[in-house]
Image 1 (cartoon, rainbow, N blue to C red):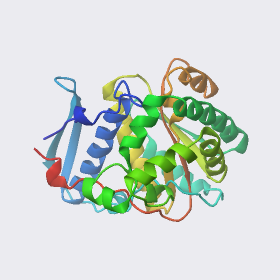
Image 2 (cartoon, rainbow, N blue to C red):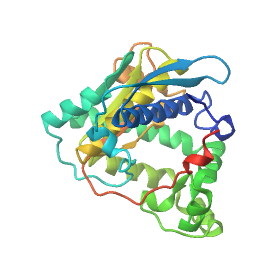
Image 3 (tube, rainbow, N blue to C red):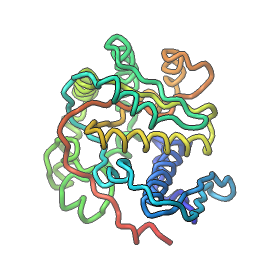
Image 4 (tube, rainbow, N blue to C red):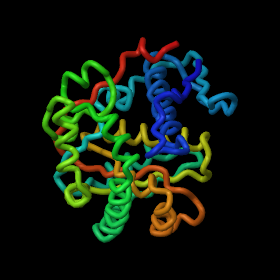
Length: 286
């Protein structure tokens, strides 16, 4: 079987080279691998560069293993709320690091406050740049589901309730966003949420190509599932890797040489948030 990118759902403003799109294919492939193993099927996954560039998955019989990661698939979410700011234990950090490891991918964990503050500086600079880009703001607004009814009708996107915001009709939510969605407000929110996180992990691939981006997605998904099993939340703060002009300075901060940072994720413990909806399986299977 294959997992193919849906190029009709590209986000050219925030993801012009389809980096995040291919990362998402890796996330889906890892979920399939975990589910296959739970049902007695070993997944062999490889990137297929032909055509649009999909992921080929071969399944072979094996002994079924019902892992904690598989059981966490239904509960995993990007929790865009506040965390409690308490340190994660060394044992749990080791579990997270083990889950995040993968061929050709490094996971850089930052748990010291000075290091996290330096990441925050880059988040703020990149977030400000994005919010001053009309194309980015228009694309973001198109993917926001301002009301629960809109989220249920479309079955995708980012429901405002998942970020702790009010549910409103689109016409009202769009106008309110124009008024309150400002760099100052958003930067304050990111500063608070990075400062109440337990740590930040940055995923870095050895090469900047679609095959490695898929592997980054697999590594992130394993990390996120293990975190969920440990009752640890996570969410993306990807602005420093999304603004291409600022990406080299962020790579320099992490001493990555010529490698490109792929994902930036904060983590910590806190309450779950309302869920963004996703399309049913029959809508994405051909």
